[in-house]
Amino acid sequence: MRLLREPATELTPTDRLLRACRGEPVDRPPVWLMRQAGRYLPEYRRVRGETSFLELCRDVDRAVEVSLQPIEHVGSEAVILFSDIFVPVPSLGVEVDFRPGPVVAEPIRSLAQVERLRAPDPRESVPFVFEILRVLRRELASRQIPLIGFSGAPFTLAAYLVEGRGSPQFGALRRMLYAAPEVLRALQARLVDLVVRYLDAQIEAGAQVVQLFDTWAGLLGPGEYREWVLPVHREIAAKLGRGRAPLILFVGGGPHVVEAMAESGADVLSLDWRVDLADAARRIGSRVSLQGNLDPCALSAPPAEIARRVRALAAAGRAARGHVLNLGHGVLPETPVEGVRAFTAAARALGSAT
Ligand code: CP3
Image (cartoon, rainbow, N blue to C red; front, side, top):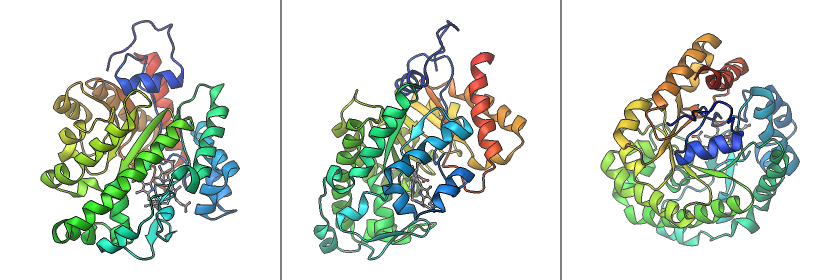
């Protein structure tokens, strides 16, 4: 990562994030956290106590309030739309419930089920998502805080649709890959269309950066990843078009697929904590920037220890084209708020240290 020489040129949070994503010089790495609006925050629990999770996602005023909480309460430097990767899925014609993760009433196991799926226009089926983004963008303009949109990636959406619910190994999904590949292929093709339309509409509504969450793609071996996941990421990156909003790609459990991730066309690779950032940077060269990757459980350490780890992470990130400080996965509900504050405070302090 190249640092700006001139300390007087302090960047706005929006410029800092966009520049780090594109690999341009910055004064210090920007910082935000995946799943930063969530159950670890008492302010979130208060709003959530008044309504169900899905209602909260549809309620523009409350979703805006919850999206902004990490700025006010823990010092994050970017806002991510408050929603869930499963919000656009019911409009395919699939019944989904949250307990607390997504549960699908009738898991998809046949080609006939895939063929019955609808091809919704997200602007019509989930208009509230874009309204939340438009309001957030207006609210954030004066503070120059960047707005991040997101979508689940086809493989991870398919994982829940086929399995029916979260699972440590997603055996039904992985068996389908070998026993009924045509079903998984058809399902992913439908989901690519949905994801491209959904992210395009989010960018149009004001998202300045978009992140694709492929939480479960790391379950595959390197060969299967290249066959089943990489082409899907490439198709999405190509169809979204470059230059509109940088694309961040998160893959959970993916240290063995970092090189393949770098071929996706994404601008930033969000890595989980099982890979060393400097090592990843050496493996991929200067094609893409990196995001991450503190173990979310490390936020339970004393503040001084968190600060030490943030400094080490930033030092490792300098080997990359650009670096966005973040966790290696989402903030966990058990996380002390103090730990999250220590993380963002240490990131901000890097500016004065370098
Ligand atoms: O990052 C943010 O703050 C934005 C909001 C956001 C949520 N989910 C809110 C949420 C984002 C970006 C997601 C993404 C998501 N959802 C992923 C990909 C990222 C990842 O963590 O791997 C996945 C796999 C899901 C599916 C999902 N939704 C699960 C497994 C769960 C339950 C477990 C959990 O971690 O909370 C949810 C529910 C959910 N999504 C909650 C929140 C705040 C908790 C719901 C509640 O309040 O009861």
